[in-house]
Length: 328
Ligand code: TYM
Image (cartoon, rainbow, N blue to C red):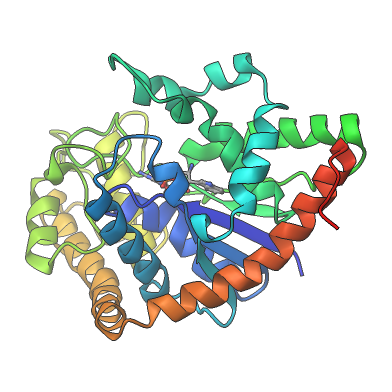
């Protein structure tokens, strides 16, 4: 079976962008692949986090994985910090990745822009992400479009390591949805929908109550026309909403265009809100059950045990090839 690995940061509320860009594919791939899905808590601290909030968010994201449909008997679900091989290989990778490569990462440029002081961890973050993936010799990495550049770097680093020290790491491929790889903000279709946007009206959180979802969608920005048509260049706002509709309904973009032909945006937006509510309500219900049962801790323990077996074996192989003496 081919291997899959991916992760999500516990750095704020998960959004519909995280669900459509990544989690939905996690759920799909678990049926045909050996899957490892983790909450990347070490990544979250590359920007300042309040300890209590980090704890709450970490448990919340893990519970959302299960609520969204990941079956812990099919996939290993764990916290990055529970498998120390990640930070150890991450360090080794910082010696393989070049400063120039890290300086080119657009996420680093965005997150550090205008800040007086930036932690060094934010700069070396892509080396840790590469380690996350290479530890499992993952074939596929389901992510949204914004992680493509980090995946390219991971591939370059894997090639370089293999050339320098001998064949060690599998070179992974990104697995990106055709529609919805970049869900945009509801208030500005030139910006990615993001959990860190200070305007909560710009994103739909997976845990937003139905009435909040309805309100946010009714206020979502559209152009001044009335044609429901998929045309990302000329109608970015409506095209973004259509992508969301398609993912929440399983209607194709063409079917959505046909359904709302000649009707304007009103009924389209109303139906879209109901589709999103119908997608998120069962997830929210399961989420509440999982949080109140406390079952997540056993799931994470089992996941970390399973992940450690693979991760430790790869780490030891990499260290041996580099010339480290392994403990006897
Ligand atoms: P993060 O936590 O920012 O986002 C998690 C996943 O959600 C996707 N995503 C989106 N997809 C479509 N539209 C959006 N608006 C949107 N916003 C977020 C992201 O592309 C991502 O797939 N560096 C990663 C986490 C990470 C990781 C890894 C991923 C760490 N190690 C190893 C894969 C493999 C990140 O910050 O994702």
